[in-house]
Image: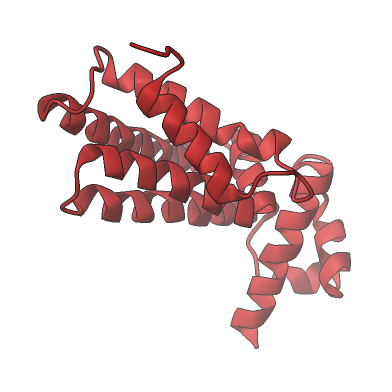
Amino acid sequence: MGANRQADIALAAVKLFEQKGYHATSVQDIADEVGLQKGSLYHYIHSKEDLLLQIAHQAISEFNDKLERILASDIPAREKLTLGIQNHITVSISNLQTTTVLLREAFSLGEHQHQVIQDQTDRYLDLWTQILIEGQKNGEFTVPQPKLAALALLGACNWVYRWYKSSGKLTAEEISSVFSDLFLKGLLQNP
């Protein structure tokens, strides 16, 4: 019961943080959403900030874990990049509210809690950079600035949460394919 109740609270918080924003969501709002008294809610959470930290940490950890597995696989860097983009877009779209909370609301965390998320975010950037460096070393990519290229790639992939609509014309896989082609082939007809 406790684990289920905590999961319900986390889901309610994600929904409210995404809809109203972290600062505009009160602990009472979360308690109301799950049908608890405010005092009873504190049996399951320490604070609203800890709840945001938990949500953001779980989200960035999922991104990191999947990309670490891709990076460790014995496939060309080109395929790692394609799979990484596909994973990022698919996870973002299938967990749109959580991704929104991670990318938009995690900045509301206090210094120590924000550093926990920043460390994980830096790790994610490092994993992307490693894929690009690997591709550079084995002759697959021409990437003079791998970290800057990784930041550009992540900027494009992260922004999906802002414009994606489930009623849109493209699926997550189709969007991933367009992004992969753009980053792997560029815009020039004959580069």
